[in-house]
Amino acid sequence: MLQLLRKDPRFFLAAILVGLALRLLFVLHFPAVVDDSRLYADIAMNWLQYGMYGITDSGHVMPTLSRLPGYPAFLAAIFAVFGWSNFRAVLLVQVAFDLATCFVTADLARRVFSERVAKAAFMLAALCPFLANYSAAALTETLEVFFTALALDFAVCGLAPIKDDGRPGSNLPWWGCGFSIGACILLRPDGGILLATVAGYLLYLLLRALFGKKSSASISLVRIVRAGTIFAISALVPLIPWTLRNLHTLHRFEPLAPRYANDSDEPLMPGFNRWTKTWIAEYVSVQEIYWNVPGDAIDVTRLPRRAFDSEAQRQETAQLFAAYNSDHDVPLELDARFAALAKARIHAAPLRYYVWLPVERIADMWLRPRTELLPSDPRWWEFNDEHGWLAISIIFGMVNLVYVAAAIVGFLRARIFPAAGLLSFFLLLRSLFLGTLENPEPRYTLECYPVVIVLATVLFIGKSHGTYRKPA
Image 1 (tube, rainbow, N blue to C red):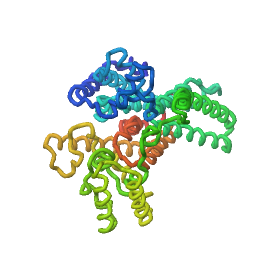
Image 2: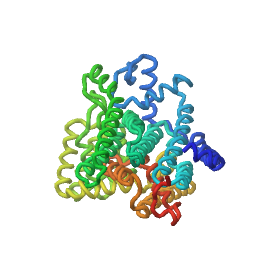
Image 3: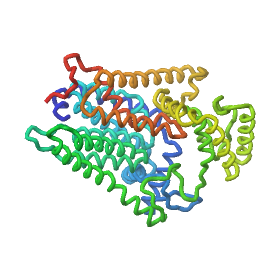
Image 4: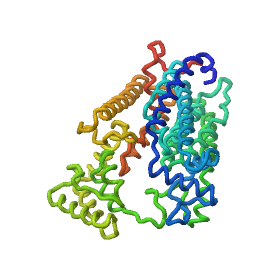
């Protein structure tokens, strides 16, 4: 990648300046410091001041395992240098990470296709408004995207063909891949999807080496086993201190974080969550219903038609909402009633619950306008927002469709290219996982955007590059 930078420094300088300007626009005019940001900051400051990884509860610091330590550690480092709760510094450092993601994405495209494609990938990443928007949000996404792209780049490097002398390449890429995935997991539990992706792909290569007919199968077998061992050790070792801390401090074996990011003394609502999954399919319902429980009132008229199978069920749901709105809490008895309603709905339409709704949630996360951090109305399709913000929603939606459509066309056009299995397996596995969530948030597909951009750059390959093989 350094060689490519030296070949065309003006192009990369111009692209960096454009990308920087776009990100600073969001930082200066649309900085996002949300409730999760403040929770992360609270943990970071308690960690710095009292040496305890905990949250402030009624004036007391209590140990917590509701959030993994990656992002609080990042915030603590920034606060220690630039001052308490200096979110402006946090966002500016994230801008630097996001610009670094552009370089990593370009290097991934270079390894998979060619140097010409790498330049296109860099520009698409630098101009991507969705990556830029989240660099201005005090959330885990920017760092998660960076380490995801870095892990994939290392993996593709490690999967490069055996050298001409028959010796396998360096083990360093697999150390880098593993530690990058470890960083992803320490930021968010769903970073484990990337671990499963690389492990699954190496397992596939191992089986092909064992049962294939190629003469080099024995060499490939040794190489794959070594790569898998290094990769697994380096990915899992970073989780050991966190796991031991949870065992020692909270007496719980928890190598990640709880499914619903709750502490041990916080009540769960399995019945309500299961009922939610029997109808939720779009982000607007997350904002209007899911995030409001418990604590805020919810409006039954905001439920879509698919939330009811009959008029009797509509009335029963209205009664449950009325019971909840009386004290804005979900006690065990009320949660059991939600669970019974969910069971009846699943029994009546199992395909809807297990197939159609997950597909709709996946489609919503991939295709809706990514304006959730902006003041735009999430119900943009009703066309009753302010004209300016309505235009932004439509433009963002069209830009997102262009990126996704270009990636699909690029994948179909390339058909077979280096690391095709790894990259497509990552997109598939992450999408399937996201379909199981009750809260379809578009930001959860953002980690896929480096791959989306790489696939989209196939459109910049000329006919003379029809084999799509990287030049020697």
